[in-house]
Image (cartoon, rainbow, N blue to C red):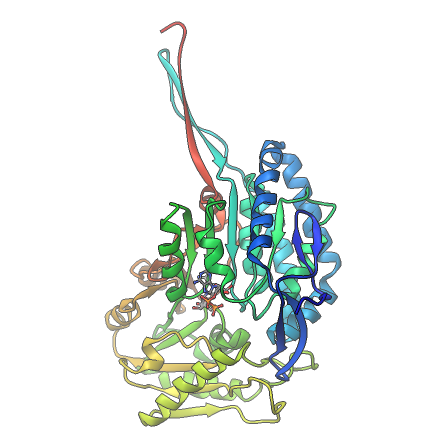
Length: 476
Ligand code: NAD
């Protein structure tokens, strides 16, 4: 089948509406197919990479301020389309409309933020004998691979720093959520030079074809740890640079002096926003025994106020899970918990569309530490709440994970909380909040949560190679 799709890939500045076939995209709230997108062929992948390579010399030679001006104009074009982009995002991803709007605006804001960053050359030595400086120069063509939980924002985490430093890009969204990204890419036409940003989409074979392709200089990947390992393995053959933003099993530690009634809503959203489908969602909640009963009660009461439903409806706080495999995974974890006899504190009931991928919000009361729901990344609306006796034990349990992405510490005494934070093995530790990310701060994972960082100066460095120029003084 080679039919034309409403949704087009962007290759060398042109809309490309046909591929080697098409792939369907499902609305997770209804289970219905809402669109078909082109399935990028191997030849089209070659064309996209060739276009990015051809665009690289001129784009990287542009004055930094000119690149910034174009990227800020792209951000403005995205902002101007917030409403339609957000609606489409809700339809393909499932998140409520207000969250989708926040993602679209966040994506544009991130791009503007990145444009304020700089990588000035560093002087290593400056004396009578010689001048040695290190410049940061772009790598070339970046292959970006993005998951389905925050399709636009996570794409922008890559587009911003890669393009502002002078690289060009071929970006692939998840097959579950290509639509908003394709629309966003179209907005760059006429703002970015042809070939600077190419967006392709297709079935599962496309990611491995990108990581194996000799025309790609670097892979920037966000997704699961299992896939991250495959990406790194495949990239090794051509010695591509990689940035891997992978899974997490973030702990939150509630200290004995925490004002639990006040923080309960924050903790609820830390775990359940976007249905827990956030790499840095709180996935294990450790609560000191002295405040455990009160926090449990406050969380259950708050959970009862949140409406589950189709994200396009007014008043809905949580939509469906994004896709069938994830729906099945989360239900499997729930069945395991049930079979193990765990105590379920709260399960949201209510009217939800019959064919959507809805899973009730579930709080599990102090399951054993070795339970799958504690040890595995659930990436869904299920939270184990765990009792601890002393802070040393809580720190040890939080750190006893193969992951090390994020963690949050909650308490009234900020210094005591900061002392706990300083002992946590994760890329980010928040105190009395969580999930705050900024284009000005590095964000990345320890252990199995990733390699490299996004955000901040270090995030820019990831898209460059150092070039040291050593000049011997004529007078020396
Ligand atoms: P996934 O690993 O299944 O897929 C991610 C992307 O990789 C998709 O675009 C997919 O098509 C592509 N892909 C699949 N197989 C590939 C291969 N062999 N080679 C190259 N690309 C391939 O992840 P997902 O289910 O889409 O996303 C959920 C996971 O992402 C969770 O584990 C979550 O924690 C993680 N995540 C991490 C971050 C972070 O910043 N650390 C952010 C969001 C999500």
